Length: 169
Image 1 (tube, rainbow, N blue to C red):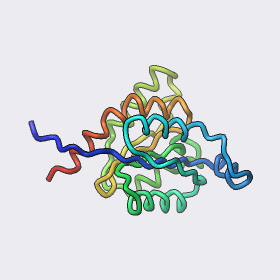
Image 2: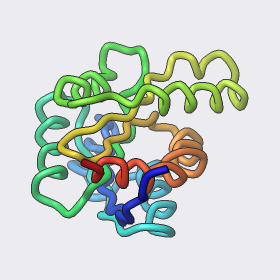
Image 3: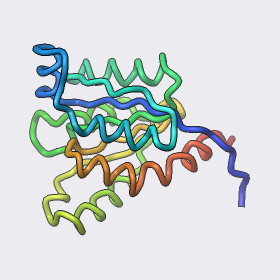
Image 4: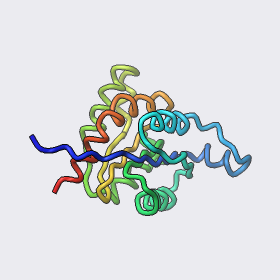
């Protein structure tokens, strides 16, 4: 067994939603529930930045992801939304394009847990986890239940170990 190096997670949360982004532009506030849930769950165990909301546009998602990876203290980025089968669901594709490695077990287990809770529609989810610049990037569905499931059942439980593994040489 190898030594586990302690690494404290610091999370950035990125909500990808045309609807929520439009709300912010039009009124300055949003009805975003999923980002709030993510922030509350994560803040209970780690440091976290407040959620940022962006439209479902490839260049904007990529730009904000790079900003979070390069210009903040975050070593964990959680992207919420854009994991479905519709042509507008591009979050997973954007992250995959810039990722160094994918961690397929995360998506597999998320779909298994979700299948037990909501049935076959869970199989349409493209929830995923990636490594970019020695940091963990999770992409989870936008529904509040999916966010809570991903965080409480998987992300909170595996991230410290994953970050520790990334520090090994």
